[in-house]
Image (cartoon, rainbow, N blue to C red; front, side, top):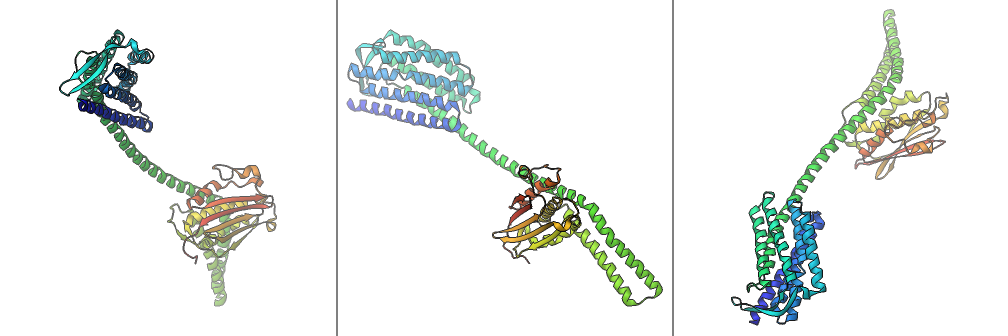
Amino acid sequence: MQRAMGALSVLSAAMGVVSLCAALLHLGLDRVSGRREHLWLGVAALGIVQLAIGNAMAYEADTAAAALRAQALALTCAAPVVIGFLRFTSHVTGARILPLELFCGTLVTGATVGVLIAPELFFAEPVQVTRIDALGVEFVRVQMTAWTTLLLPPLLANYVIVTCLFWKHRNQFEDPLWIVGSVGVWTLTTLNDTAVGFGLYDGPFLVVFGYLFFLSTFTVLLVRRFVGSLDRMEATNEELQRVVDERTLDLRNKDLQVAHGARMATVGTLSAGLAREIQQPLREVSARIDDVAHDFGLLGSSGEIEARVADARAGIERIRSIVSELLHVARRDGGEFGAVNLNRVIENVLPIVRHEARDRTRLTTELGDIPTVEGDERLLGQILLNLVLNAIQAIPEDGTADAHHVVVGTEAALPNVRLVVQDTGPGIPDEVRDHVFEPFFSTKSPSEAVGLGLAVTRQLVERHRGTIAIESSPKGTRLVVELPSSDEVAP
């Protein structure tokens, strides 16, 4: 006899342990997913843990005091079980059952408080002995009073209403028959335990088993939904990453278009000066050719003719060189990144801007022994062109060109290569200096003339994984660009 009773107690306690694990699982899922149905299913599971412990104690009760403690513990589980179950039903089905929740919640909470304060109102002697002959089980229980009987109709109505709600919303679930069936099993086991508690017949307490069946069904459902949400989230992240990659590529292309627009704007500012620069050699060529024609007419000496033809060819070559560099800067298509000799870029670009500097300042270079940098030669030329033009335009046109100078220099600062453009202009005021790299920033005062292309210049420098810094004082401004060097040695 004692052995069979011990087995039922152990089985009930084991189901309590399983319920505790389920409670911890759903409370953890609530923290991770933020879905309230996990919270309330976990709350109901904690109530079932309490009920399982009470049942295990009831199977071992052999006195009225032990039976009273066991049955009181089992009855006070009604509050977390009923409230958790109703809140879970509301969240998982979307049904609005607030009046039912308030009524049943108030009822079971009041009953729990009553059992804790005055258990004699709900349980009374004499004790009854329950025998389950098929299992060889015998235990003592106390009788329930009329106060306990008053709890039964609303609680049973609660189960009926909830069962109907799950049936009504069964199409929301992947396996509706399992859902409705699990609720039905829990309802039947609750009726069984009510009948056993009131002594209507002798049998084991089964509601813990009914709840575990219900819990297993919904755990599979909710975990499946959670995993499905993770899969959808992963797919969404992959899609977002694809969109980000596409947008990033689009932005890079837009940056190149902006850079090209800045190049074309810069070239436009140079066009008038270049026209004057080209007119002079053209006049020289025209005059020399006229002289050659005249000399041929007079049958002059061949040596003098050859010298004049050589002068004409030099003028033509000068025109070709200037136009070639202009087209090189203005070409629309971006080149590929590779090893670039920054000194050679400077030598190619500076002839284009010398006419701009002619009436303002002396333009000189201090080129160091540097390695190559990794970059696009055309974009690096644009960086240099913008910086030099800003330096030249920072110097006022006051007819004292010999008193000012703009120095373009390079030096190795391994692992970087440093490009320095320094002028002897009036400097940049502190309140302006923090804004010179902002898009569309411009100034009108001669002492603040730093606005041409610096926003685009910084974008181009950052595209080359470099940095740009500005130092300024009343004696002049120094712009320093640092670019990562490549592994090659500059030729």
